[in-house]
Picture (spheres, rainbow, N blue to C red):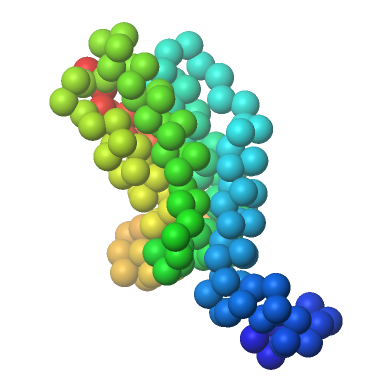
Length: 166
């Protein structure tokens, strides 16, 4: 808290006045991060003819946004310590596309849209949070590390779409 207060140019007591505790400050920062993610996802242009095309585009766009904001990924992965639900907007968008796909017969009926949407997001967020560890743990993947991120995104989107396709 001392470091945060110094960097913010305020005294520690002021932080406690506004946020009441370290947890309160963490929740405020997390809420702001979640709002940034929601705003970014709402502004993404996700076109395509059918729900699976739009879902592929949405997943790729989410991955690109999160990859461009590594601090946000790190913060959001710590959300388990909070009551915040930072991934709810991203999951909701995917659930809607999956349900639409089921209605059109393009997505398997036995797919739980909420579970599949959460799993799809985990493929993206977990990779970005563990990218260096994954590259180091699987030498064939780390050999072309600059391209690994793009390969992962493409493979993850394909895995999700093929897994839900009717």
